[in-house]
Length: 157
Image (cartoon, rainbow, N blue to C red; front, top):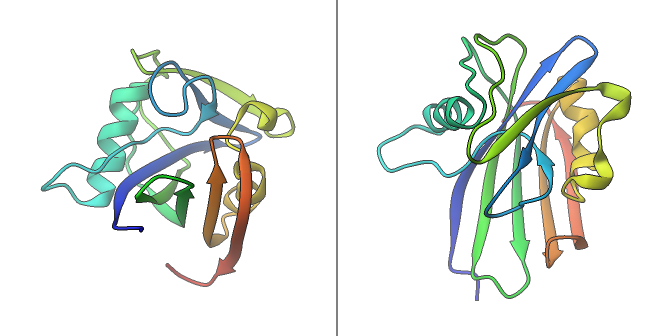
């Protein structure tokens, strides 16, 4: 029985020809490259949570975030759905800095390490990189196998 959802953020910092990813060092998704983000805290807006997590995990601040996606994840055997709000940042302040949780690294767009990322990323990343908006749903068995999926481009979120 799916009871509730956990509100999460994901921020991708994109520059001409490259994207900043972080190697998750511990906790959920450890050993995978990902964007920066995490749980939205009580009293925070979703965007405030996204900015805080980006700063905590990468040392970067951003002047503006563009919301580009909303992805829902179901994990077999887990009661909570993950409701992930995806943002893109094209300008940033500071230098990417390793944190306890993440090790940031720039990747050229044709060298994004999809084989070391969540299995859904290669499906929606192209939309994000084209500045298109999208909504999606992914059902996972464990952390590597997608049992079911929906992904569509939308005009607005």
